[in-house]
Image: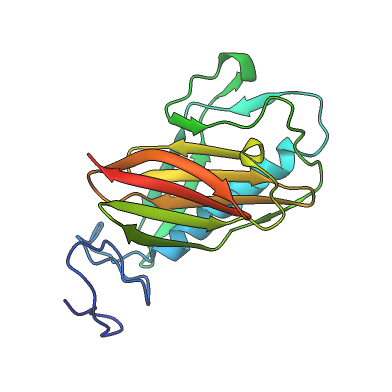
Length: 193
């Protein structure tokens, strides 16, 4: 299958062109939305919340209740608006995710650290898929949190001077079977359901 935008070869099972980002599936409201533009909007909202969380405030409030995404195309170019819904205290938050690995209980999260997106790659090993995430400066699994959602994984790692954050797409009919950390690389093993 050929990408309609850049002309490079793609596979039918892919949702987006890995070269130019064009949606290879159905159009949303008649537009091919650029996933990189959408992710940039989420990244900005995430960094804003992360800065508030690590600003030294003694209030331990976590936003919950989800988000609202509004896509408005009445003025031509689609405009994306993301809003957070509700607030709850940390002790009452209900997680709608499956925690694969949580941070060690004694782990202190750095107050002033830069957020980075780590490099990652996926490869096949036997009947499993392996996602390898490079986490320079991370010492052990105690510094890493992994959450599995319906179609993605969230990886957070906390070093001395940096925080790593990455959302990874999980291929259809796969789920996490195990994870391990060796030589500053997190390896997540995905098995077919």
